[in-house]
Length: 242
Image 1 (spheres, rainbow, N blue to C red):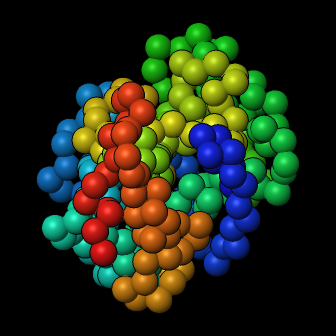
Image 2: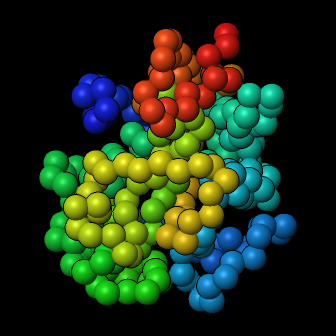
């Protein structure tokens, strides 16, 4: 995993986990009561636009409906992930990139024309999931179609509470639809080409704060900026407290 701002590279060891073969669709979204109605018709279209907060709420509600322990709790310091829970959740960036690459080492797991809906297709919105070729893990639309929320903060020092987005969307050029490209946005942002896919699996000890390439301690360390801030930087101060 590479951090472009700090120019640091780190190796991540993953525990086994499950990841949905497709992005969450409108039909799946509608099965959970109380969620904001979608604006786009088509049961097999990816659910969009979806905020990060809505995505984690959907995960918890789906877990309860399936008789699974919800992955998320909510406290004074925001959303908490119980890494020992079996319920539905957002993947970490490391999990997402591992699943996207599917054993490959290049920027994409195949020719974009074959695997992804991008700006090269001249679309005005997403297409139904699963219409282009899957990767070697059987996952569709890991690149293109819509951006996908991940669990991780984008950069707690520079972007505050922004969360990470991966994969690219239907109107993104080829350079933006690569396995290593990451963006971030506010967890309450409503962005037309953003949705999510779900992961499952206990990947740490109950109550733990480290799993699958993510660490609460690392989040706090990155947020602990001292001295004058560069222009535009908004560190997430709440994470700096022990």
